Image (cartoon, rainbow over all chains, first blue to last red; front, side, top):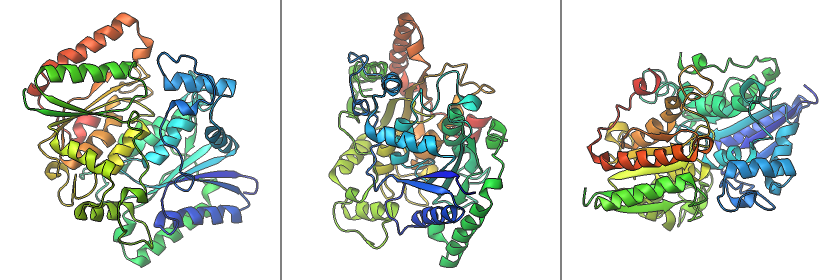
Length: 230
Length: 230
């Protein structure tokens, strides 16, 4: 609906890829609805994934033993984070919905996107004990993981060799987003687009466009162990 | 035992950290046993976590649409990978045992280590369909994930808010190492070292040193869904 704000965090090296198309479809459809859409195109930004001392723009609390989590928490509170992180945090703060678009790498997101999680979702900004899970600091936001796989749907079903695809969603949906208070829309998974005919790929793109039309009417999933492991 | 080769892939920014101590203890104890120990100190190496075109030293197979997995597979086969990856692959090839030492970031390994997985474990080198899981190309090797957490053991038990710690081991132990044919020794987890008294931390370090003394007698875990989700 008009006025809603969406941040798409996108990790593919090539805009001509299937992931690039999925990203563009979301951008286009959501703008058509009147939403304001921001993209963090991580590879194009050459986004830094390493969590280092450079993420703190000013002095360290304890230069004797570098503790990343503690230093980032303190730096956030005094406004001492590096500018690339401040920018990403502003985008997150503005957004009603975060869409993560990526190809699955090793049962998870590519390192460049994991680095975004490690560096942007700082304590004090995204969570601050006891404000985690349902009272996380990013509550009232939604997130949706949209990704492609190499393996087929059958290979990611319960009892098959890769296990249920939901098993691998636990750390990223529950452990990251839910931890920060964000509610999860059902993941959007395109299985093995590289191994299906062109026509099937077009159907997958059309299905994503179709889903986006009624996205704002969707209820979040019940992000409990049962959803993942029942 | 004398002659065994160990690669420690280590991701902490500060050698004076608790993770740094765990790494040094393993290095020392294993050398004392006569093992040859190599360390990949990822932050000290400023290891590149991003999966990009630069990982292919020569020409692309298809510059029209960059497909990282396919390009890396082809580059591996013709000897066209970037030199930092060739070096890491040689270390892996040599090793009987891989130890991954890191602080848990967001229910997983830090991005710099995820980048090591994404970039080093190339198709053709670590797996090549149908050579995956028990017939993965790195079979006859062992791996051990040794990590520290922020949360306590109770917070990572079944039924508690973070869920069983084993849930989050599925993507990294099964989805990465087992996929490549590597057998898993039981993980070594130090819960919440930051929040316990100094004496307890010393006990944790001593327990790790103690475990290492008989490490080569350990049987691998049964890396099946039951181990993770039973």
